[in-house]
Image (cartoon, rainbow, N blue to C red; front, side):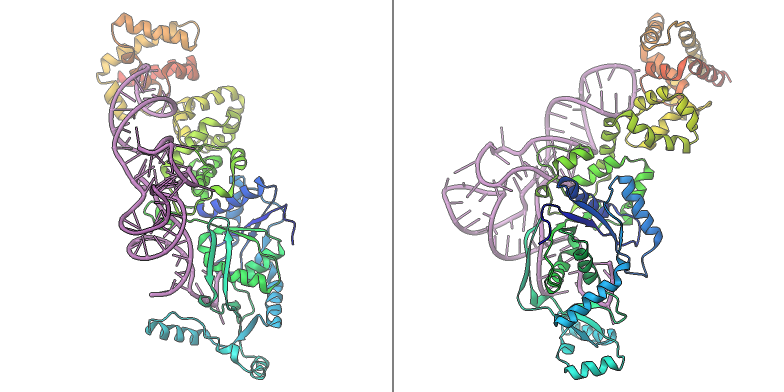
Length: 482
RNA sequence: GGCGCUAUCGUCUAGGGGACUAGGACGGGGCCCUCUCAAGGCCCAAACACGGGUUCGAAUCCCGUUAGCGCUACCA
């Protein structure tokens, strides 16, 4: 028996595409389990399908994991490197009599499958090669005839206590003698997985429930190989808004897409965690550490969940407001620089001002991109005037110009450039003119930002500073008087 | 077709025999706050798939039905 006090889990993606949100969630639950119970979380790249695996995909998986902050223990295991052990395990099975050689060709099998179909029967390999006389097998092997290795499924029932589903049972008669080694002597998935999980001393196998029907085959292999069984946990799938399996048609499914879209990894993880798990009660918004704290396999869901991008955005907004400015800054800064709003040096120079700006903008943002979009008026020399904003708030150019001139004067006369003083000046102006304050604020807002929406007018004036604010009004006057 | 898994508001879920007039969140609608937009607060609409049992009593346990999904390769 292995050390039961220290669980070992793994995430085993095949590098045939980008890290998918479903895969990310599987990784997250494995990671949470390991972190919660003081275990190990390993990463194994299942690259045995040479035709579809690429180095680029492997890199994308690393990148996605790193971005999410799901760090793994020990060296990454590449399944392809374990070929000799896989073959040795198949050989052992052959020697112990748990497996046998099968000389049926793919074409023959296909033919028989078709016949069964025609008779409306379920096709199952009929074990004919298992009945071949020993001498004939030896002769055909010696003659160099290609063969695959099949596992001989015993009588009985194979069952296990799933961490998510409780007891699941399969009658062995429904499991055919599956191939474990191809005719080119490379292993089939189920053998490779079991061989590696044994070698890596994995104690908890947590994966998507599309693997449920592989599990009895794998249990049979563990037994035949004389290895202790891990605990299995089969997580439900994630579906798209239409209830079908999540795919490209449903929009972004690669975690990299969300990274570039301006999401926070903590929000992504929080959202993913809630898709298939609940801490119980009303708890929803959590930090990673809180998730570790609250995690328990008890809360794992059996039912497939639908990926709702709206709630993801909301969740991101929550995290945007929740984290500290020090944490937020490094996530926004690259986007600010990419958008050419400022250089790294400028931001460092005005760090305090910059953090205050982020604080001003984040409350009305759901993504990092939202923050960047709103940040433009605070950095750029020139702004663009939104036609709708102009039409609405600068309806009569001459009148608006007059008002803006008075506004400018009032602001310019304000001694201390802080919110209370500015408020007093502007409200005083409105009162003198006998109009509501909003009538003063809105045209000013357009002059300052070119938009109808922005943070509060006083905090915005403070943030822009006296010079830029007055310059913006002058430019607006120039535009209006043209 | 065979085998398996699943089934609470549109969506994510709480619930593990009486505390249920079924709770929360997203989204939707309304109101409040208010210089705009957000955020926040308050309110509204919205669900136990169906049929049988078990029980004094079922969203909760059992069995069917239906539906959805998954697997059914010398893919992973």
